[in-house]
Image (cartoon, rainbow, N blue to C red; front, side):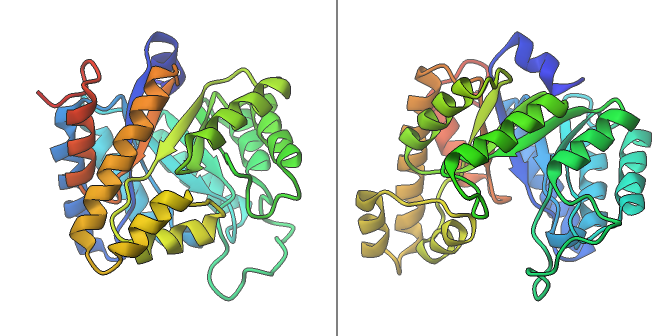
Length: 292
């Protein structure tokens, strides 16, 4: 089923997993997805490594999960550092496996090639990948958007213009980058409405697991940490267990506020862990997703 059809019927809860570095780690990711299935996610997704570095594992996990009758799966696909024929081949394999949903992303270049310009054989932007998918396939298509702006955007207005372009080229819905202040998401909604974006925008929530990790993540993607939360993370920087509990508390408050304000869904970046998101959803009491 295409995710846009689910979104037309109901608000969604979804989970995002990432592939391991080695093939022997694939069963563990599938096991995490199986254990989280008790929360009845409306869909799950599997990320793609920089430059497609874990492409084979992404495809493997996506296809394994798709074979479960009660689980809708969205594949991630990045186009950076891969030629158009390679990307087209991935799409062909996903189609043959019965995958119906793909999120189109540019992605990050492999380490050491960050400043290299795209070759004439690559899709330079996610918008070009969306256009290619719409011209050649019948996938449900998602795109990404950025509450605090993409790190390469010259302004928030330029950033939202790209989001509008994704809609115009055929994206069915958008999922946001992580953020820790809901005000950034609501401001994104206002910019999107002013720009004529009418497709659903699903907020992405990442429960914090450790202070160094989230500092690294936010520095890479350009997200900010609210000062009060940052102070707590600094205080317990050496105590990952305490930071995990802080992360659960903050993400629960975020999700509760977002849900009460009518978001079309919440997409949890679970980092292949069950503990935090299990506690969050058990505390939220969202109908059908409590794990009972």
